[in-house]
Image (cartoon, rainbow, N blue to C red; front, side, top):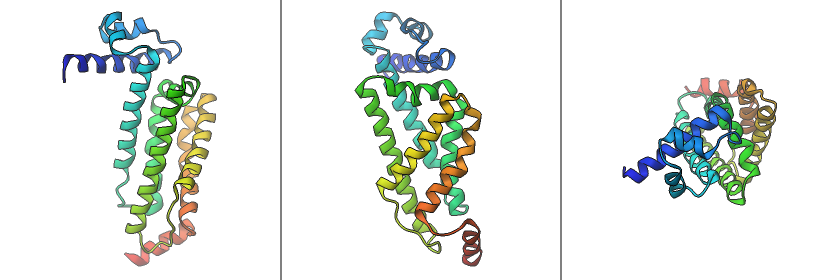
Length: 208
C-alpha cells in the first residue's frame, strides 16, 4: 500500500474509532486527524469533509458486513436455519457497535443526496444477495417446495426488517436486535415456501 493509501485508511479507521466514542455528530475533524496522526492539511487533502470520509467508512463497513453474511450461509443445516444465519450475522454486527450502527442507520439518511444514495445502493446489494442465496438454497433443498424470490419481494422484506431495526435503534434498545432474527426468518421463509417449520423437518428426515 502506498503512503497515501496508508494515510487514507488511517483516517477512515480514526473516524470509525471516534464515532464509536462520541457518535458521528460529536466527532470533529481535528479529532479524526489527531487519532489518525495526520495534520489537518493531510485530512483535507484526503477528504473534502467529514461526510466524504464517513461515506468511505460506510462503504468499507457494508462491504465487510456483506462478506460476513455471505460466509455465514453454508447450506449445511436446515434451509430455515441457513436463512436465520444471515439475519443473525447481520443483526449481531449491528448490536456490537451501537454508535456506528446509529450513524449508519439514522444519521446517514440526514446527510447529502450522495449519502442517501449510498444507503440505497446498500439496500439494493443486500436484496440481490438474498435473492442469490435463495436461488442457491432452492438448488440444495430440492425436496422443499419453493418459489423464486423476486427482487421486489426481497426489498420489501428487507425494508420491513430495516424499519424494525431503526425503531429499536432510535429507542436505544440495541440488545433487542437479535429478537428480530426469528421474525425476519419467518418473513423470508413464508415468502419462499408454503412449508411450516415442522413439515420442513419431516421432509428433511425423509430426504436423508
